[in-house]
Structure formats: C-alpha cells, structure tokens
Length: 243
Picture 1 (spheres, helix red, strand yellow):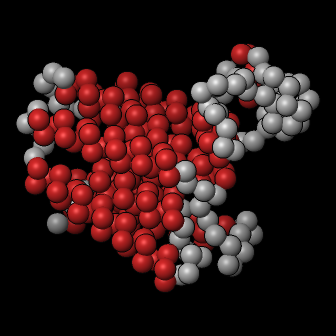
Picture 2: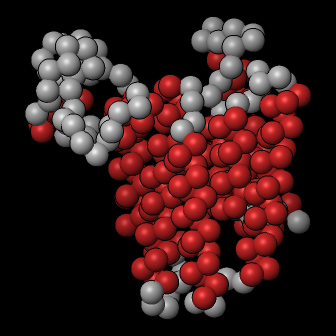
C-alpha cells in the first residue's frame, strides 16, 4: 500500500484501500497478507479481475524479513549493552522494510522514490551517531563510511552521465549512497559488484527467453538491494576467502 500510494502521489496515512480495477472500497478480509491473494486465486473479490503479482511478492518479502529478524537475528545483532541491544535490531528491521519498498518500487514501477532512500540515509547516520556515543562505533569509522558512500554515489553518477541516462537513473546513484553508508569500505565494492553480476545474469536470461530485447532496461535497484543483503550476510567470509 505504501509503495503504490507513494508512486501515485497519494497519502498512505489516510484514506481507505480500494480495488485496482472497479475502485470499490476493500474490506479487511480482502487485505490479509498472502492469504487473501491465495483465497481469491489472484483476482479481485469484487470484480474478479487479475491482481498484480506484486502483492504476494512484497508480502512474502516483508514476512520473510520479520521471520529472519525474530529467528536468525539473534546471531546478527551483537550489541549487548542497553539501549543498543534494542536499538540495533530496530534499526535493521526499519532499514530492511525501506530496502524492500525501494526494490519493489523499481521492480514494479520503474522508479526509486528518493524519499525512501533519504530516510534510510538519515536513519543510518542517526543510528551510527548513537553508536558512537555508546562506544560501539568510532568517528573514523563514520568518516570512512561517509567517504565510501560519496564515492559510490559519484561512481553511479559518472555511469549515468556516460550513458546519457540510458544505463542508470538518478535513483540508482542515490541508492548507491545509502549502500555505501551501510556497508562501508571495502564491503561496498563487493555489494555493488554482486549487484552488477546478478543484474547481468538476469539480463542474459531475459534476452534468451525473449522477456527483454536489446536496448531495453532492467530495474537495477532490486539487484543492488540483493547485493547489499548478500554482502551483509556473507561479506566477511567472502572477503576473508579472497584475502
């Protein structure tokens, strides 16, 4: 709902949800995540027209994020001192939701709402500053992350200029800023490289299957977010192996 209303420049704070086709107001049982989509076999209950596949995909991703956060997060969240023990998991949950919204917006609508990215940047900076006051982070680390973020932004900015805006969009370079701030150095290189590799593989498969033609673009944000995720989970091991 947040993704769709942001793209359509509508408020996601007020107003009731309506059918995509006949615009009839939806009831609560029409919007139960995943279940309603399966129950109505991917169609609207009121007019029986097909619903976008984005609904179950986004719902599954958010559900998976919460499952990971509860079940696996204990191995990822390692700041034991109060209030950092609470702040760290809340930060990663919030950033995870933001990244899903960014990836979904680009995948289904071909645009990256920069307000999501800037919110992620501001949240990350505030989080890091709080970590510094708690002794779990250092000013030098923050400076390195900021420099890496600016470098990632300039790299994508250069790509957009060199391709005259046909290869990259403005949203990609802003997203690179957030990725650089989250991953720091040298993980940002790994995350961006992983995004390019994943995008290339999917692009080749799309050409081979006829889903895309030469000259057509792919939304790149989902691959950037996936590269970020893989680096967060296994970046240390990969860099250690390469080193």
